[in-house]
Image 1 (cartoon, rainbow, N blue to C red):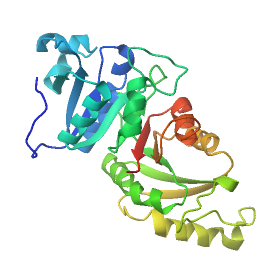
Image 2 (spheres, rainbow, N blue to C red; image 1 turned 135 degrees about the horizontal axis):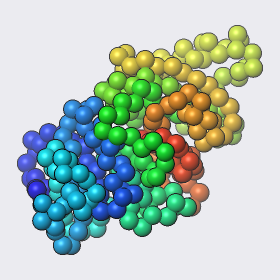
Image 3 (tube, rainbow, N blue to C red; image 1 turned 120 degrees about the horizontal axis):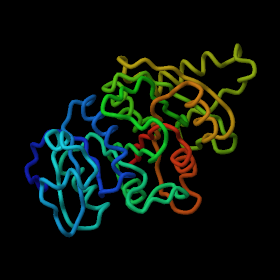
Length: 283
């Protein structure tokens, strides 16, 4: 068992926070799979005021005996979200994987208090899994398709490169979904909004799609990328597309905060997604 390393030469890692509950441990298979696919080490962090003996820790965290030989454990005291985020920085983490809920599981909430605090502060790619859904990923999980909703804004384009790179490392094909949502189209300088004549695609759809891909979706030539255009509500269209096209993972680039009515798309997808959701927060 180890505490936080002080050196800067640590290999990149996946970390998963666990609190001893089965709801938190349900994300462990996905964390194992990501560590294998990204070829990094797997670290488990347990925040507690009373550290457990190492021989009892795996059992307490609902992990099998074999897991103890393959992962690095960290036990530390403090405010849980802060400990998780600090460890992520110190380990030069590739991804944090965690359940949306832990010991105090309330299915009516988007996420528990710890997960919500991490979501709002984490600049590292963060994979959130909703517990107790059917078919939780196991250690042999191999995502074949990743869905990336893209609003056509430059700020999203700047951050989506990291998501594209993760898809490449996973060996996943990419579906880029652009949902035109009327007045909610991005208004920032350089935004690339929807084509005017979707109902008559021979007018400008082909040229629009080519330009969209040139601007936003050609930075990872190793990944196979498909662009799809829809109109309507972003949450509904994203979830429907993911379900109908058997997507293994939804990746969201987002900015802002979760208070009140903010981040409605992120909240809606986190609440209803039948697959893991990968969040990349804009710094």
